[in-house]
Image (cartoon, rainbow, N blue to C red; front, side, top):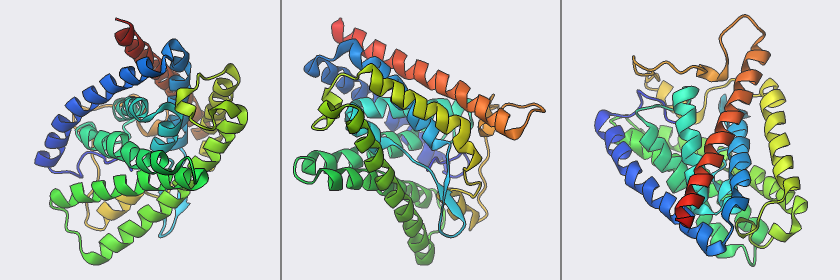
Length: 308
């Protein structure tokens, strides 16, 4: 789902970069307003950190979908349900920034496009069905939230490729939409399973989890799941190209990092002579710690703004 550098034209990525800045500023302001309204304060900070770490870990694990391609959990809908839409957008933005600069996953120049697609549009697309139907058809609302968050974000990414001059014949569009639909169905199923697991750990969160303070049991369980995914999930991760890479390859478009860019943990692994599993697992664990720290610090800053 991440758009690498080299896929979008300069007018498209630069416009989206500029548009993303005020949008994220507004979302951050809304996040601390929500914290004030629900009077949650510092009790939400650890949950923001572990949810960010869990989604980061899940995004490392690609699962196969048709036509020799792969996809991974995006997590926008899951975080929307657990944290609320504004906080989810802030945490997703932090994840995307770290992935681009530290792991070379998603373009630095295309960062604004990825933020808009995944942290803003994707979160909003997941929040709307959940908000509308959670009271009467909760399971369906959660599944649809996960599904639409990926499908709508994917459609925006395809539109940005088209605006960048990438030729989009009808057959390729149909194939691309089919691949995004397959990934969206998996996202919906994983989101529903994850939310149900969270509700079993904290039954009081079933009605409105984003308005509930997180307990140590829930935070610990999410943290353990993130560590296990990072340590062992990579053993079963698919090496097939992701949807957007598959689409771009049909027209000879290849991703490339800017010449000045050198990500210290590119491709989610340390450099060295150790085994591939060790290089990837240790890099992933370092990423977990970094994501947790950034997301927790962001939550702390939002709480300070609210208290000021």
